[in-house]
Image 1 (cartoon, one colour):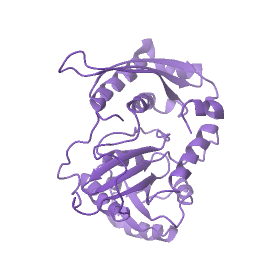
Image 2 (image 1 turned 180 degrees about the vertical axis):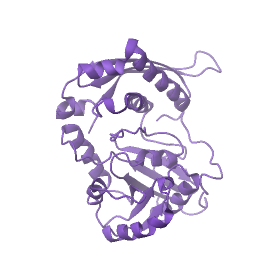
Image 3 (image 1 turned 30 degrees about the horizontal axis):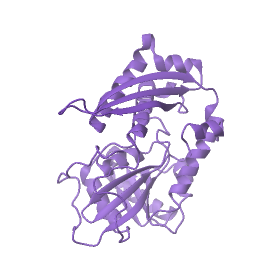
Length: 321
């Protein structure tokens, strides 16, 4: 993202900064887990600003997204990954799974995210990807959904038998105090070395990438389970104009195409008299204006591309590695 999006000042609740006079630390922390377990919500909380989209639909995250947070002498470089998918063996999911495997092979620490008190076959498949050479912290997320905390003790004991976890962290990604505590835990595993990014950088992704992701987030949120997860968004035009006069904001002109697999899906996205696609555009514009501190004009189109998710060449052309 460009330099216009910077991290704001830390509030007392967000975390106590390490001693700035100490040796600089910097390292990679991978956030992994099954689809829809709260990885992107956790990343956004750690970075202190939304850089990864969220929705109830599994597989919302499709790219390796890096988010940075610098506190005192330590720079945390978090890597959010797609949920590891085994249900559909198409070209898109093969690409996403490759991203997950690549992300966990070259980091300093792994945060393995599961729902507190739960361990499903999908969780187990992700756990099998994690070797013993990299320290792994078990993040028992969504602690606020657990009715009886006393039931967690035997569950944690069972989890200890599944993998040699370095630490166990029951928490809620929505709780600032839990996020503060997690920074202190992660810091211990990061090597002493110079920072990789400027202190105010939040992500290695561009505003154009964020715009496409926000359209996809609103698309999924406003269509629910009716629309297949394979729908995607392509940015056709992204132009930036400087402020016309002092005191005004810069202008972003964006044109994007929502790609679906069937004519029925196209009608669903457009909605009655175009109301749904209009709302997708409006909600995207409003959020992007806040995040980018700019005036935004956005126009959306919908195209049908049958079978694109199982076409490796098209998957690559749509920006998936």
